[in-house]
Image 1 (cartoon, rainbow, N blue to C red):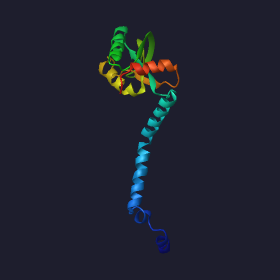
Image 2 (tube, helix red, strand yellow; image 1 turned 30 degrees about the horizontal axis):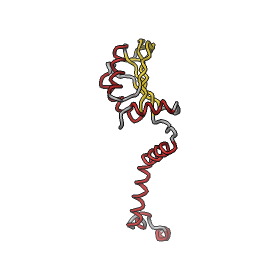
Image 3 (cartoon, rainbow, N blue to C red; image 1 turned 45 degrees about the vertical axis):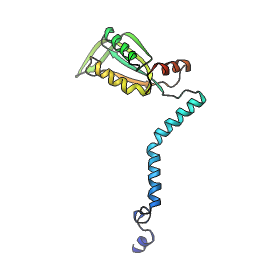
Image 4 (tube, helix red, strand yellow; image 1 turned 90 degrees about the vertical axis):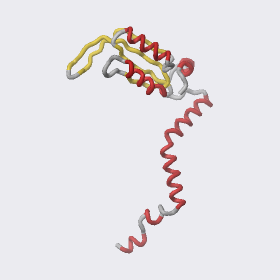
Length: 161
């Protein structure tokens, strides 16, 4: 076994002590850690140059409210804060759900919020701060495709990041 250790010294002892190797290892780690950001920037640049839509740039968020007045108040404030370009208020959605071990039934008002995907976190924080439900329903789906003119209108209607 000694002859194997002499022919193949441990990798750490031979190569990682070299300054050049350490430099390239750090460069590789930095690239791998920044890859998602670099990919996003390159896709946005491609989208800007070609005029094509970057899938997932915009989202539709769904929020249930207990009544129409609360829905209108939340929708108006979302627009005032420039967190969305448009909020549809869909009346009288029947909901059945589990709550504290029991099946509950309620009539709710559904908000469809059209916004930038980058604003979903801020929108979520706002909804949780003002919503009367203990656990407000809020989820979003990215917009894959759509009318380019409408998507540009959303972009212009939502505050810059």
